[in-house]
Image: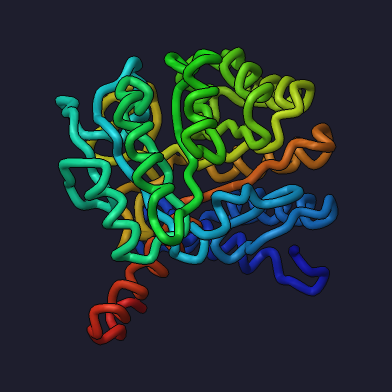
Length: 322
């Protein structure tokens, strides 16, 4: 939780400086003031988390995010194939049907499970592309993970196009803990989340925050509250090599500066402020919905923790991680 004695202007300057218009330049005063104002209002409303990395949440962290924040989680890229063509997608083009576990190409679900055991991972996210295009592969992965001596927690990310009730029940029976929907990919259609809510105790919507969609985003949050969906996970919209051209064609611009040692993307201008506004709206208007900001700062911190753990395991020097 942000404490009363915290210098929120310092956190605001840090965030502004790490993503300023020119690398190394002083942060823009107007932006610092706006970030400071939002952080002050969030503190007064009771936001929780860490302002230094902009890892903030309104009520409780999603269970699947806790191991990830410790550097103990990873992603399985089930397939690059997808039913959608979102401008913000960061997957490589042309799309390719491949299975990648913890960054390592593998041939079988059993090989993917062996990667979990090798690295001691405690949570796994199944994503794509659209993983449910390869439902048999997903179910085989779940069975392989359940067979491990220490099975990890498993969440699945989907746009919802293939998430009918029968599929969701099969996923639940196979051991899936939680399902997360990208509602932005479906233009805020929450029908799949409503179906999942009757099958899974833990359902989340996880989306990039596009500043121009603030009205739709707030309307969606009120509907999630009505549906009793427990979690909304938000990310800054970011630009990378795979989505930059289409994003810039829509008027989005990456914030220059703050180059990362561990990430291959940069947040879009104004997205952080929009994320903070949504956190505040969640505290004020959504008494049961928990909103979690997994910012680019959060992702940098997670990547760095994972990097350090790999270095320690391999016995390599760690000085370069600073």
